[in-house]
Length: 384
Image 1 (tube, helix red, strand yellow):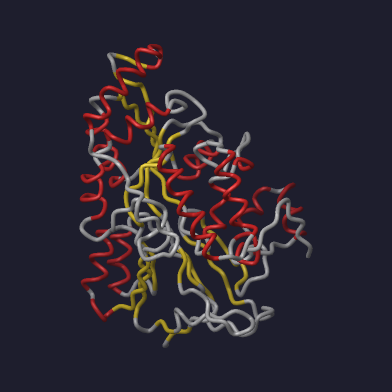
Image 2: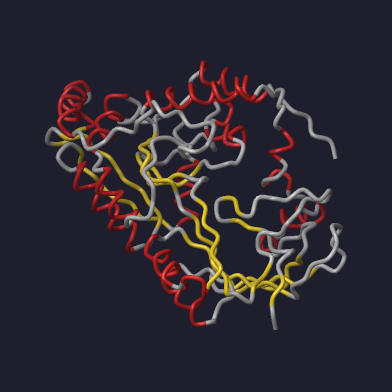
């Protein structure tokens, strides 16, 4: 297999540890074009083979005895999409599940209360939760509107509710203990007095985008979800004096599609968190903007692009750290995201599940146990 890169990338091998490195069957890909139902029956090169699926209920994979990397210990793995992870936590405790993953602070409390009766793997060095604005259409094509929303955001109330005393506040996309973190960048919020004059000035210049002296916006989020509804209530309480907020609740796949198409004003979102931040370039790059955009805010800054490409092309870690600290300040100053919390992923298992963190590369290098809630399965074995 040959990859032809458009630009130099000294960190390209790291990209292959993610979805880019997943090899799907060309025959299956071709067949799925003619028969889209085959998208529900993937064919790859992994340790398990697709067996069956009841959509929104269970997906089952069985061991691939011909796996190229060696032994696979489990006969099969079944995945259940339990949308209420507090219920999933109770099912795990009751023995109805062998493992689960969650970012729900209340479910995490339940799992922690079990102490050593469960195996837990916790990680909050990955994704961040934030609000994100679309700069390609009114009103957030105007930085005054973006600043006003930021200042009016009741960030502390969000953190207290969604964080439940467990999640750490986030100022940027990097946790404080990571080398990339810029401690000088601080997320603004809870400053409504700074929002008022910005809204007044914006509405004076753009009366068609305002009603009653407030900026008209739509808040989009995924649901149905009681937690997301409560978060929307909290945000609207802070935004309400300055913004007329209309809500749109979409199923998650529709939600993501609408954001990719640029059909939104502001959304609640979770993203970033790649072990090497170069892999997060796609979310920030100018060349990711198009009819379908992975640069979700659709914001292009040529100077930022130059820095992104420079750090990707070099191996000098000190220079790369310096660049990422500059990038955090630039992102802050552009008012694209309102960072809330570092996402805490907890993967919990019954004690009969073993070797959860024992995965190694083909040449014997230990792999990260979890990345944004994802963990390896081929090395796991269980007591009978």
